[in-house]
Image: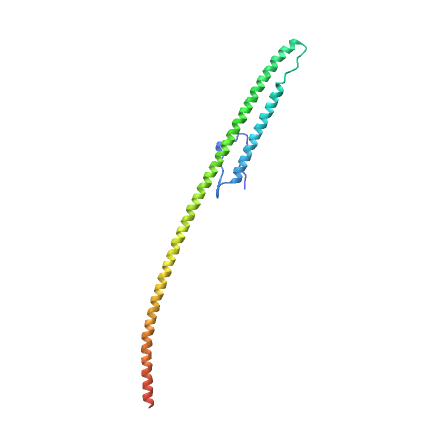
Amino acid sequence: MENTVSEPETLPEADVRFPIVLRGYDRRQVDEYVRVAEKRVDRHEKARRVAERRLAKAQVPAPRAAEPDDAAGLGRRIEKILQVAKAEAAAIVEQARKEGEELRAAAEKAVAEAEAARAETDRAAQRDAQTILSRAEEEAATIRATHRAVLDQLSQIAGVVEEVRDRFGTEAAAESSADDEADEVIEN
C-alpha cells in the first residue's frame, strides 16, 4: 500500500484526509500520521530543552572584570543578550506548546472521524446483512409454497391415475372373465 502521509514542516492538520477502507479509515495510515505528528512534537520538545539549557547557561553570572570601564558596558550587553535569549526561549516554548496542542487535536479529530466512519460502516453492514437475510427468508418461503403446490398437484395426479386404473382394471377384469367363459363354451 502506498504511504500518503509525509512529514512536511508545514503540514496543515485541518487538511489531513485518510481514505476509507472496508471498516473505516486505513489504520496503518492513521498510525503513520500519528507517528509523524509525535516526531514533530518530540523535535519541538528537544528544541525547547536546548533553548532552556542555553538560557540557563546564559544566566550564570559572568566573572567580574578587573577593568571597571569595560565591565559596565559588558554587563549591559550581557543583560540585553539575556533578555533576547529569554524572549526567544519563551517564544520557542510557546510555539512548541501550540504546535503540540494542534497536533494532538488533529490526531484526536482523525481518531474520532475514523471511529465515526467505522461505526457508520458497521451500521451499513448490519443493514445490508439484514436485507440479504430478509430476501433469503422470502425466497425460502416462496420455494416452500411452490414445493407444497407441486406436492398437492402430484397427489391429485396420483388420485386420477388410481381412479383410471380402478376403472380400467375393473373393465379389463370383466372382459377377461367374459373371454374365459366364451372360451369354455367353445371348447365344450
